[in-house]
Image (cartoon, rainbow, N blue to C red; front, side, top):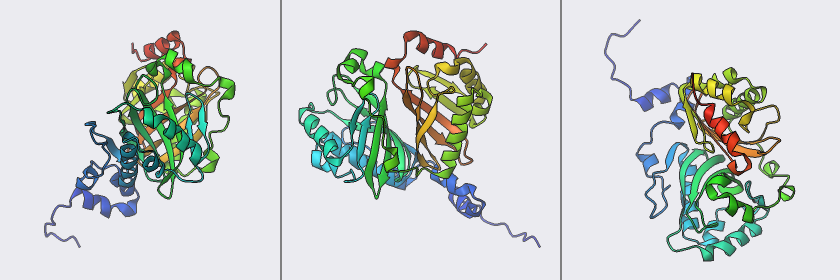
Length: 334
């Protein structure tokens, strides 16, 4: 029998909580607009006005990164190193080829550079995707921290018991300056063959791993239509190196089809190295043969597991001007 008494309207959060048994609500609650609790998460570095996008970050990982970048910007070696696990501990710069495989070697790098940092230099996050198990973090190093140019970077991070166990940085050598890059990077034959993902294992959320596996398979097969079908209706795909953004599955399919194997994260030689993140998103490191052998794709997901935002980052210094122009031209629609 239907009760005709009018019931009070449920709040959005109560509706989501009540729907948890249906399975979708758990994912949805992870990516709600920030509430007061989220807004109080200390993610901003003192003196940096940039608002950090934590819309796809669990509060605990936002707190962890906020504390880490606060101590790093303060050039406090010991406080910074307190965020790293004693073992395992890996930090690799995937563009320079610089590996650190122990806590002490990471400590030595910071101990070498931090005393030389100019007054007012900062390292700060701009976007965080994932949770306190694993995440990707977009961050900026201002000029003077590691060379004369600023560095805009995506870090792929695994945590164990609240400590950083593995961190791999990806950035664009063209933005840094090719001459600056060539002066400090290792020769290709000296790059680390192992990025130590085996030391932390694959702990990303199963939903994210399924999306990554299906997307990577479609890109590997050159199936642009299948890849685009994994995106939400108003999703965007951004190649940060060629400065191209396309919006909506139709434009994404067109771009992927036109760009073809010019995109280093697509084609038969590509493979997934490592996945990090939560049900709200994260990213995956990829490998390939050819001029651009590695990079990262950051991914944000909606409550139904559709991609709402994909941002690709790799070393543009390894690609010719013609290749970048081909990628940019692939976004043109006719």
